[in-house]
Amino acid sequence: MISHPNLIVGIERSEDAGVYKLTEKLAIIQTLDFFTPIVDDPYEFGQIAATNSLSDVYAKGGTPITAMNIVCFPIKTMDVMILREILRGGLDKMREAGVVLVGGHSVDDNELKYGLSVTGIIHPKKVVMNNGAKPGDKLIFTKKLGTGIISTGIKKGAVKKSTIKKATRSMTTLNKTASEVMMAVGVHACTDVTGFGFLGHAAEMLTDTDNGMVIESAKVPFFPEVRTLAESGFLPGGLYRNRDFRKKMVKFSPDVPEYLTNLLFDPQTSGGLLIAVAKNKASRLIDAMHNAGVSDAAIVGEVVNKPKGKILVR
Ligand code: CO
Ligand code: CO
Image (tube, rainbow, N blue to C red; front, side, top):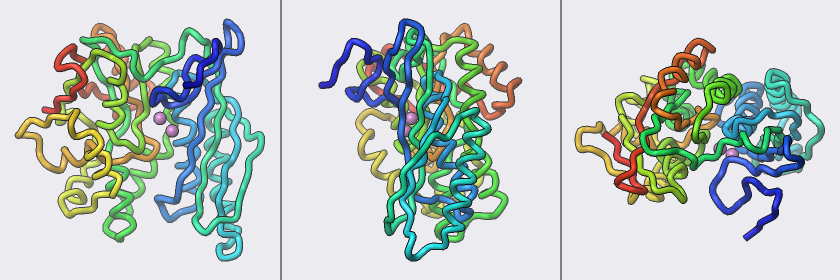
């Protein structure tokens, strides 16, 4: 166990980022993410990777301020122009976020990977934990699900250009606005939905709490094209791992269609924020999200006191 009087969030629990108090009014948020390409266009991949890396700071309610590039690149076999485009995509997203690139590191590697190490700031008392939800809270989710299934379909050439475009637009949308609206309204808990899928990250929100959850599967936003892709078997390996890992915690009503049971475990890249907010603030938060342009934001379920530690999907 690692503890320190100034440590607000450390590595003990599965939180989105580390948080360390510098003064009574200032804490730093630190996070690191990088991965292999999930779209063909290098500029778009750079944008997606940067947007994804910045997301963990937004999930804590913080403001990202600086970032560093992490690059693995097969310099002997790949055109260096590809790397330039990736870095340009990343830099454009950092600019949009108001983040300053301060350095980075690259290594020669057979498999291309890119991401950022990000530092953000926040008032130490305003940090939004992923497990702060209270029974009765409404659960709000801010982006469409299905990017893992779509990326799997892309690799097999089974996805239409228009669908790729929609998914890319979602993955390159910063969670900045959603986070700012969330902080203005005030919420109990937040995480961003990424590799463990919607239900995997929902399950993390129950860690060290006495809470359970009810998810209304019909209300969870997703890309409509995903249904056919899922039913045609374009399911990423991570989806099965996510389901195996959490299946004991999750109970599906028999009337939930199979493609939705898969979709809810689909690993997301640069997914939306999953937020727990007091019931009496939920519609205000949704309205504020929609007014600010976070148009997919929807109430998708609620936090309950029993059954404890379980997620019921109906
Ligand atoms: Co996260
Ligand atoms: Co992360």
